[in-house]
Image (cartoon, rainbow, N blue to C red; front, side, top):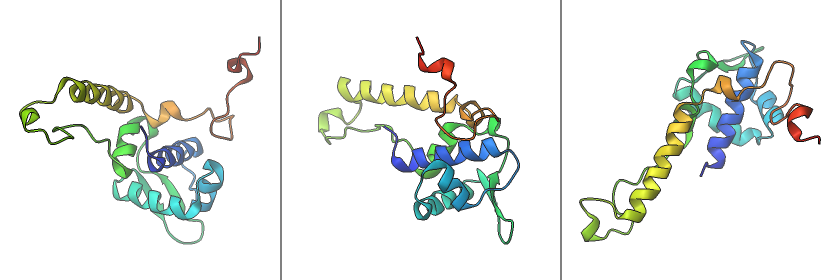
Length: 147
């Protein structure tokens, strides 16, 4: 459901949220998030155009969040790089479905809407790890099912 670009953007935003106000270079973000740096540069440009990150050029420069992570949703990030596409008309171009979607495509669109709502209600802050964690996708031992 999520494109690789959207996943990379979310990883980058979570990493920046974890850093707080300190700047991170593209190389730093790429290393921490395991995203190819050339690809990440394009992702970061899209995030900057959407005013989700700010960049500072020069020595000691880098990227930081444009506003608090609690005010940026996953949907904001996804829409900046690869917006979710809803089904607005019959994907098959059938004339009899011109005025309304068939039951199949209507149901699929409802599922897409539910996913979109989840992304809209999830902030970057909620996805960021505690300051003690240094890596993405690292879980406390207690949650790994050590039975």
